[in-house]
Length: 273
Image (cartoon, rainbow, N blue to C red; front, side, top):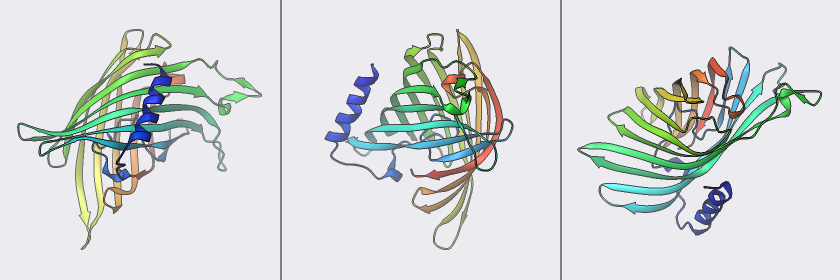
């Protein structure tokens, strides 16, 4: 699918949508430890003194089906994940930025007594070097075209605060050409503890782990991502989270897809789903 057709599909869905769902009512809850999810927040990476800035959202647009056992919605995703360099005194030159947008189909259903949910995304990612990686107008490395279109499918089970999931990416168009076409994914999330006041939840402690096999030139490399999340709800599922994250594996940023990252980071996130 060409990028212009994907943009056209998103535009048509926005125009024809008859019911817009509130931001905190996503049918499929984004995966906490998966780096390719819509977020609003920032993380500081201690080992390399980098800052990751996330800006974006996912919205359910149209309810396609709803009955006693199944609910299906159509939605869209738009977000960026940007890497900045810390130079002190609140100076953060932008080194690289990646853009993600696409459409999604989410589903909640029951199977043999289990509460399950799934999400199918058809999406585009492009990556770009920014002036924070240049010196006197010369880039430390040569920029190149990084663009990929892919199908991303994941199914998750909800078992009393325990959420295992499995899925895969299938990359059907890419530049450069040596990016692996199939990326399997496994993960798990736990809700460890909930502290309550007399009237509402005060703090939820969550732990999540995400594993992928990605790489290039038919070489598969593991990606391990873990998140410890202290979530302070304000209303329904909206609130503020303080995060502690660990990441090891090929860089999530397309301009550095052959580089290996290994860091611990901490930061905050505005939860809106």
